Length: 283
Image 1 (tube, one colour):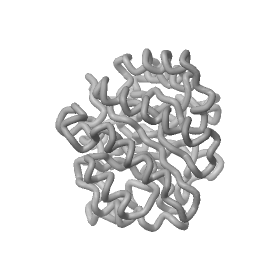
Image 2 (cartoon, rainbow, N blue to C red; image 1 turned 180 degrees about the vertical axis):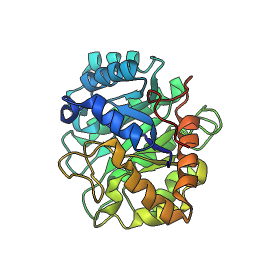
Image 3 (tube, rainbow, N blue to C red; image 1 turned 90 degrees about the horizontal axis):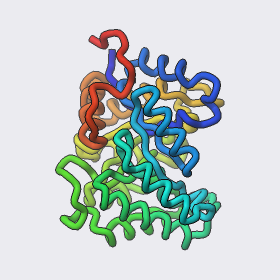
Image 4 (cartoon, rainbow, N blue to C red; image 1 turned 90 degrees about the vertical axis):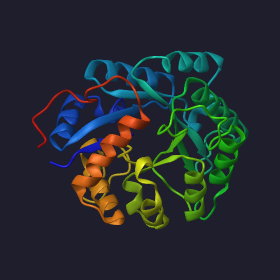
């Protein structure tokens, strides 16, 4: 069986309220060995932490740009407390979203800066969402500017070797954006978004990502790939995007799977044997 990871799945979302254990079991049966559950505000980050403790997963705590305007000092204090927990392996999901623009840009930028500074201080990677309006790239340009200002890609960001300062979650953007992000040492994660019209540059970027900085995700319950139910994506469907990624890079599914598990463990470090409860042998 091909080994798989899903480095971004919102299993604490309402869409999984009735059957999250069954969804995790289906993922395990499909070969998924690692699951990372990011929060998007304080309640969802706390729910992710509880899910991680109960089921042996990993989680991330953060405030999404959509809700940045709603986050007060109390929310930020709660977030900084959550990131100290052992199973919290990253900071986020955070970033910039100039497409829907639910929060003013100035507020989004301030929120991003606080998260990036926290990620640097606690030596955990940031998980970054970034969207511009169709045909534009201002969010991508602003994101790169903020990363550079805090020292990403330099010795000013004190993370261990093999531990990127941030992961571009569900990559979307032009080719040179990907090139600049990689030059800063970032990792890139691909989701079912790669199959949508307008995301053709993702295939080019997928072929150029250094092997050690490559990841794959579902962004469940969103961004269903071809063949998955559109009403609710699940971690088991990460296999579709992983197969696409293997094809883009000219490697076998098995070789890619082994690489993805190794990358996940190198980037999201904590003491672990497996992020999912033990299942049947994969070999």
